[in-house]
Each structure stands twice: as structure tokens, then as C-alpha cells.
Image (cartoon, rainbow, N blue to C red):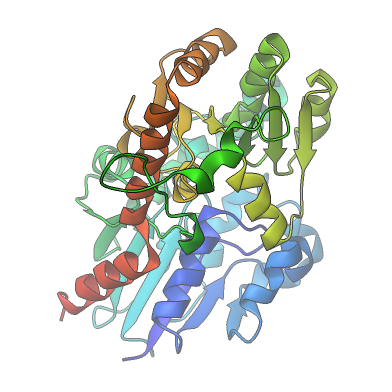
Length: 386
């Protein structure tokens, strides 16, 4: 069987790109198609794509389009409809904001779309840029978004089968595309060395976790995020400023300078961490904080739970599927620092054994999202189509 993987673009590395890497691991002989490929912008993650056979669009050969792909997104239909998949038996699109599900295939070619999310800017969800604040951009967006939304719907009808990355995304597929979808959660890296031991008469000692209770050197909270508007990292910073707790923020983005300007001395920004440095920061953290709005799944909180870290998250979107209040973390209902602080205080009020139990629950929750489970689900789904 000849297989093609199609991805929106390869100019940054996030949750969608992790799924693409996993799909390539499952189907190592598959060719990869994308609109734009810029290894330089991928930084340390560029090596993940070395040796791949990657085909880019005609737009990738126009230098200024790589930087202006967002404001010039009205060209997306012309990009995806220009590819030829006549020689493939199966096409799997890994689609999100740049709508690569719009590729055209012959009736003999099965097209499965793994949808991370419908384009946020077309359906009223928060985006990385507050474009609604500026009337010229708002007028321009209204002009181009109307035909794009129509095309987005029409192209969704070309897909033979949808896979959603969460129940939340499945609901959006049903709402905006009138299509059903199979939910297959994305894979999350779960480190083996962070399995926990809960202290009780049957399960032994917890002395290997004593580092969690040493004091200020390990008494901090973390978050991992693109520093963009929809992630609302400012809520976490305001909470840290108000309660004077230590917060480590891992990530970069267009809002980085603004966020640094409002952060106190107890807030530390980290980026480009090596794997061992990343693990070191995670293993000593007390909890993972999350304030993203309408996140379709949210890989970062689940990844944190893989380290046995409880998650305190804003109750919005797909995170409600993974964070169970008072079991593996807490959900707060209002998007402000006071609501978050209340949940942090609840965490701090736990006894040592209660806290360790929550860490164990977090780890157990994350084990539902391993690569092996993802692979089994994807392979079984593709086989069922024959």
C-alpha cells in the first residue's frame, strides 16, 4: 500500500507536529506533503525530519509567502488542490488551521483526516493574535474568511473518514462539518523513570520522593506553552506575582516580551532546554499550571502528568477530558488569578500522602496516551477500512 502523509506546514514544532512524527513512525515508507517546510525555524526539532521524503507546495518556493502565510491564507485552497495523489492508495492528512484536509483524491484513494482542530479564526475561537482589536485587519479578515469558511466546509466533505484528537474536537467536527469522527487521542511521551511509589503498608517506602518536600529549591510550579494570547500565560504570572510562588515558564512566542514585562523576580522563563534539562525541571515541580482557552486536547498537561505532576487547569475545552478534579489535579472555573490561586491553596492543603496519591493518579492517567496505544488505534482503524 502506497501512503502519503499531509501536514499543514512545517515551520514550528508543537502538538500537531508530534502527531505527524508518530504517524511517520507507524508508516515509515510514507511520503510527506506540506505547504511550507523551513528547517531553520524548527530549531532543535529539525533533526526529527531528517531523512524524510518531503514534498512542498509551489508556495514554498515564493520566499515572502513563508512569513506571510497567515494574512495570505486565502491562497490555501490553491495550495492544497495543486497536489496530485493519484498514485497513492491512502492519504492521511494531519490538519488544523491551514486546512490541509482540502487535498483532492481519486475515489480509489482513501482519505483519512486526523483533525487537530477546525481553523480557530473561522469559527470564533481565540487565536494567537488579537486581530479583532484592529478595524483594518477586522475588515480584511471578514472579507477573506467568509469564502474560506465555505471552502473549509466543502473540503471537509471530500474526506472519507475523520479522526478527532478529543471528544471536544469530535463535537466541533459534528457542529461545523456535519460529519462523524472516531476519537483517537494523540500520543504523549511518558518517561519510564518517573513511575511512583505510594506510601502505605502494602506498597513500600516513598523515600525516593523526599526531594518534593525539601523546601524552596524544589518548591515551584511550571508551565509549558507557546507564549501566545490564547494560552493566557498572563493569568499564571499574575497568580505567581500575587502569591509570591516560584513559576518556571518553558516556551517562546510572540507575547514573550510582554509577559516578561509583567513578571516578578519569582518568575523564570526557559527555552531550548536539552532533554535532560527538561526532565530535571519537570521532576522537581510541584504542579503544572494551565490557562489555555478552548484547547482541543492539550498535550502539555498530559505530558506533565507523565512525570507524576498534578495539573491545575482552566476548565475549558479538551483538558476536561484528561484532568479529573481532585483526583489527578484541579480544574478552576474562572479565567483569573484568584480562581487559580484557590485551587493552588487546595493542593497545598493536602497531606503528604494525599499529594503523593494525586501524583500517582496523574501518572496513571497519562499512561492511557502512550505511543503504543496510539499506534494500535491508528493501525486498527486503517485496517477496518479495507
